[in-house]
Each structure stands twice: as structure tokens, then as C-alpha cells.
Image 1 (spheres, rainbow, N blue to C red):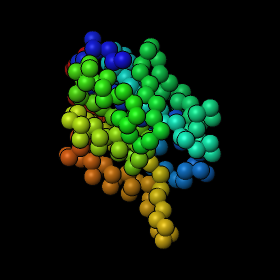
Image 2: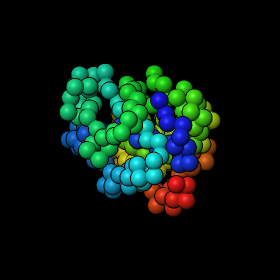
Image 3: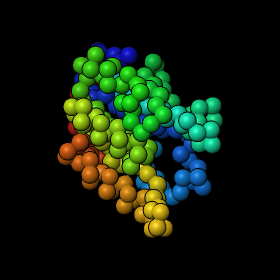
Image 4: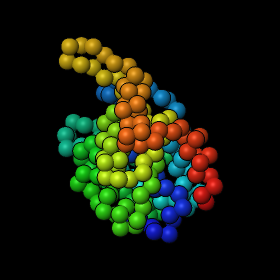
Amino acid sequence: MIDILTQNLPVLIMIDWQQGFRDLDYWGQRNNPDAENNAARLLAHWRAHGGTVIHVQHGSTSPQSRLYPGQPGHDFEHFARPQNGEAVYGKNVNSGFIGTRLEADLRAADRTRLVICGISTDHCVNTTTRMAGNLGFDAILAADACFCFDRKLPDGRVFDAQLVHDVHLASLSGEFATILTTGQILSQVGHCD
């Protein structure tokens, strides 16, 4: 359940910061090597100022996946491990809103402002952010606190991770979320403590 007393800051939603995404032999090349540091900066700010932090954790239904429950890759990255009763919502699809109580808990606490970061820009971050916008939440996506991987079409064409990242940010911008950097977010929320 979300703490209604920490409403000055938007809710920070940390999506799928899990160890399984380190395996580049499995996932392919990625962009934004600073994503973890930027997410850690957001998390540290929220914790230091008593903000609400929510963790979303992907549990694959495929036993071969790096994100299958019980596998080491399912575990949170060290910097992103939940603390002090921070809520964790487990999912097995691309949206943190499907099959979880995330929307119901946000509404019950009257929380409509969200800051989102995580992995990967084109999958779970994109889908959760789109749904947040469609559900009427005021979402901000931290562009430099998420990343994705190269993508390949069936015809063999490969799209660089940075291009994939940028295209997905562009498609979310304005219609579903406000796209800002970590620095911009921290400068805007700094006065809300």
C-alpha cells in the first residue's frame, strides 16, 4: 500500500532494475551506460526526502529466461533493492499496471503524479508509461535513467539501441508523458521536500 503522507514528491516508479539484464550475450548491445547511475540518483533523492518509491519486478514465465523467479537474474540490482517497506509489484507482462494492484493503490492514495525509470525503454518502460498516460496519470519519464538493447527484424536488419531508445522516447513525448533528464527532474522536484 502507498503511504498517503509522502505526497509532496511524485511517486517514483522503478521498473525492472534486475540483475538478469546484465547478460549482454543474451540480450545484445545496449545504450546509455549511465542509466543505473541516474536511476540511483533519483532513488537517493526520493529516499532522502521521504518520497514514495515503487518497484516493479518482472517474473518471466519461461524457465530459460534470465528473469525467471528463483534465478539470480530475477533479483534486483544492488542499488535498486527495496528498502523500508517500499512497495514491490510483480508482473509477468510488459506493463506494471496489468495483473497488479498498482493502479488501484495509486488511486486509493490519490496519487496521480509519477516519475518513471527502468529497463527497457522499448518494452516495459514504454508499455507502463503509455498505460499511465492512458489511465490519466501525469507521467514524467526520465530519459537518461532507462536503456534498451539493439533490435533485429526478421529480415536481418538491426536497429542500434540508441535509435530504438530515442524513437520510443519520441513516441511517448507529449501524448503519454513528459520526457525529462534526471537533472531536470531533480531540479524541478527539489523544492517539493
